[in-house]
Length: 199
Image 1 (tube, rainbow, N blue to C red):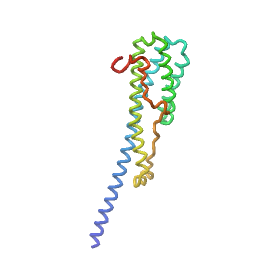
Image 2 (image 1 turned 90 degrees about the horizontal axis):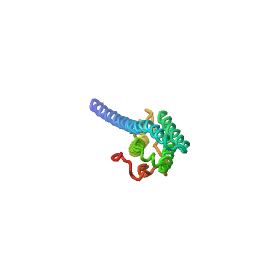
Image 3 (image 1 turned 30 degrees about the vertical axis):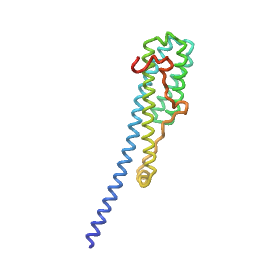
Image 4 (image 1 turned 180 degrees about the vertical axis):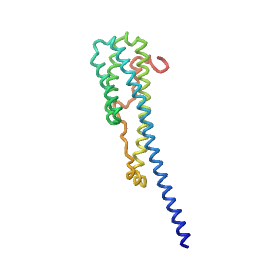
């Protein structure tokens, strides 16, 4: 009788341990999904970081009276890069707002420079940056979904018991202001000339 009780107790203990291991593994998977989805955004931010100076240099040859706008774009680009390197999601979101606003003004002003709009190098860079903007917006959705899944799970019972003891943390969403959440179809500013298939 005592042996049977010991076996039942061991089986129950093994079941509890297996259950908590399962919860732990799920929390680890969620954490890594957040990391993976951020890495996808990170790669795109780096690519755009490298492309923007080329675009500004090309535009500078034509937009002699718009140096302040060009300076603001580069300054905003540097703020995004600094926040990205610090891993500060909230600051990336704020810097992105400034950069997107600056790019919107930049491309609107470019309309006044027909020679710039006709420049092949400029058209290709504009198309590339427009493409990167779309990809960043797509990856941001996936990142925020991963963050939500993680943040909800670490607050649910019984997951919260393991999450709190093993320091699983909540992550910040990557948020832009409402006006900047709209798709930025930069090619529309050029009469639909540029696009991934048209550059």
